[in-house]
Each structure stands twice: as C-alpha cells, then as structure tokens.
Length: 281
Length: 220
Image (tube, rainbow over all chains, first blue to last red):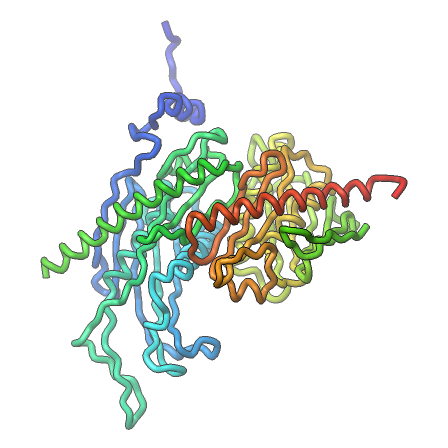
C-alpha cells in the first residue's frame, strides 16, 4: 500500500518523472521521442502588416508581422536592400521573462534568425533594391512569442517563412522629372522566395536520449539543445548547438535526417495554407 | 611562458598562450591564433546575487567585450555559446550558490574569433584551478568557393568563404560540444569539417598540455 502522496511527482521530482517515461520510449505528453507536436499555421492574421503569420506548435504560439519601408541604400551595399529581424519574448509568454530590455535568450534568438536569413538566402537582398545606390526596401520582421512552451526557434522560422510568402510589396516607380519615388498601391507583387528553410530542434536528456520538439519543461531539464535548419535541396543552413553535453556523429546524423523530413512536412503545410488563401480570394 | 605551435597536414596558424598574466582575477590567460588575440579573466567562486542564485550549482556568467564599442546582439549570442560550453565541462555542482564570472576581451580580430574565445576561456578556467570534467577547444573551418576546407581561417579567408563553422570539441571523446555555422553546406561537407576539426583539436590539446607542462616544470 502506497503512503498518501500530497505532492505530485511532476513537481517534486520533475527529472525522475520524465525519466520514467523516457525509459519506456515515450514522453509525458504521450508523444514518441521523434514526434513533433501538432503544428497549425494561419497567414495574413494582421491586416495592417504587409505580411503576417501565426504559428502554433503545440501550446507554443508565435506571431510574425512584416513591415516594408522605403529607405536609402547603404554605401557598402549599393545594390541591396536589407532585412531586420527581431524576436521578442515578452513577459506575457512565460514567467521566466521579465519586463525591460530584451534578455539573452531573445537576443540570441534574433541573431539566430538573422543568421538563418543570411545563410539560407530565403530572399535575395538584391530583389529588394529599387534603384541602385538610391532606393531600396527594408523589411522589418517582428516576431513575437505569445505563449512560450518550448521550441520557440522552430516556430519563429516557420512564422517568418510563412509571413515572407504572404508579403506583397507595392510597385514603386521613380519619377524622372522630380526624381521622387511614387508608390502604386494598386499594383502589388509577392516577394520572390528562393529557399524554404525549416528548423527542427532537439533536446538531449541524460547525455544520450534524443527527443524532438521539446516543451519548455523538457528544455529546462535537458543537458543540451540543438537546432538543425535545412532547405528543400537538403542543404544545411544552420547547425546550431550553443553548448551543453557533447554528441557523437551518429546522433547528429539522426537529427539531420529528422530535420529533412520535417522540412518537407512544413513546406507542404505552408504551401497548402498559401493556396487555400489564394483560392478563397 | 610564451610558445608557438607549428603546422603540418591540418594547418592551423601559430598559437601562443600566456597564463596568470593579470593579478586581480583568480585565473587569467591570453590566447593568440595568428593575428587573432583574446584575453580572458575568471573571477570566482564568489558571492552571488540573490536573483541569480542557483541552489544546486554555481552561476556562470560570460561577458564578451569587443575591441571597440559596446557588446551587441552578436556578442550576446557568442556569450551564450561560450557559457553553455563551459557549463558542460565545469563541475558546477561542487560550488552551489556561488558565482563564476568569465570575461573575454577581444584584443584583435583576424578571423576564427569564436574559437579563440573558447580556447582562451579554457586556459583561463584551467589557470583558475576550477574543477572540470574535461577540457574543450574551439576550431573554426571555412569552406571556400572551390569546396576546400580551410582550418583556422583569417578574416580575409572568412569573407571569401561559402560556409563557416565553429565547433567546440571535448578532450575525452573528441565529440562536438558546440556548433555554430554560417552559410549553407551539404551533410557530407559537415561531416568532413567535423572530422577535420577533431583532428585539429588533438593538436590544440597537445599545445595546451605543452604550455601547462612548461609552466609547472622546474627544469625547463
């Protein structure tokens, strides 16, 4: 007969609690080790933005809005526009974030998203140039987490990709007489998306057990985290492992092949949602 | 206490390292890879702020100071990489409720900066005499336009490269502890770069060993 238990094992011994599931090759929420949570996508959620998307991966909710502005080109890159991503983890999304200037995690996530944009060449910044040395577009990609339940990087990449696919830029003609730009809001064109980068995040438990798409509880108990970003050609855009326990080569290989299948799944989802919006119009 | 490591098949630039060169920190080191140079200082175990206290292990804080200007978002992300690598190798549970601070000052950046941070950090932690489960080192690989792998690239080589990867390798099993990449590359190229980095890491660990041995031996 068990003594009466007043404390939930999950709160008293969270690590032991999770281990007992992992021993049986499953997880506390009923998933298998290599199973992602249900991913849902909604695009065009913000009507005032030039492009937007809302992504849910399980409970994790991330919204991305894209704002396009006209600006002067920089001296170093006269033939290119630029993209400014920003990831915000407000106190609303989890108790671990405090109000005030962005913390280390938010800053590291912003840098990671900027690196993914640059490495994958999802958009060629030459496309954003309107007149060489004079005028170009700058895309502000604001990504905000509404609900933090782990794996925010994957959700951010999906939200960004879907929002970029949803973005329409108006035509700009430079008046030759006055040399001022004239924006034709009647004629809008979609951005040309060159690559479809999609991320897959993993957590390492007890230095050896690999699980995908960790929840925030699993993230905090894990010994290492890892994010693999691949594109549709199977090229790797990023292998981001900010530290933690070391991983043997076979395990890395496992992560990469899981990331490739995830890329196909998500690209299919994004295309499906984009098409459904097109047919509805 | 300065020394230099030559190069054979895996070409690395010349290394230099000096430990205990500052008097105030509990451990300090400067690490030089070619023209890239980083100075590291470690303070601790010391008293910790209540808000940062962790009940079962020490709190590690890593601060990266660029050569000019204030630390930006890029430095934050590098700090995260260095901190989590150090956390994995340090036995932090031996110093619960205390703080460790690692400061990395860039003296000159000529490429492979993140790997230089990691090497300087490891030497400084060693100098501070902190208990560690293993050592670690940083190796940067660049893949140039022809698909050639260049280890320990200079800033000019980094700029021309198609992809750039930095790994932290541990000394016990030579596995990848940290990975940070830029540019796109195939799985095969990744595997090659990891293999080259593991080979290069053996040289770096030998250099660590030589420089520490020289420091503590009475005859040399």
